[in-house]
Amino acid sequence: MVTLAAVKVWAVAHPEFMAVVVWPIVTAIVTALFKPKTPEAYAKLPPRLAALLQLIGAIGLDAGKAVSILKKVVMGTQDAGKSLPPPEAP
Image (tube, rainbow, N blue to C red; front, side, top):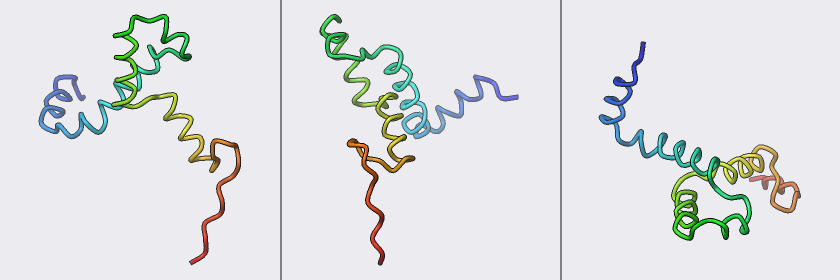
């Protein structure tokens, strides 16, 4: 059975794991839970908190944007809802 202590030891021994896997997950969770959805909601927050939430979303993974971009990749669509052009033949 894998314990939390074993995971911690492994993560400390492999710092690239933290940068590539854990940091995006943590920032996605913070962004999804606390990021205001509209500019008006940002205006209601204290300025430093609003800036901090924007910073976390900018340097990490914005879950909302990531999901919408992933949908575009899977569906093969652009912002305007048009299909992407077919790839050119070699």
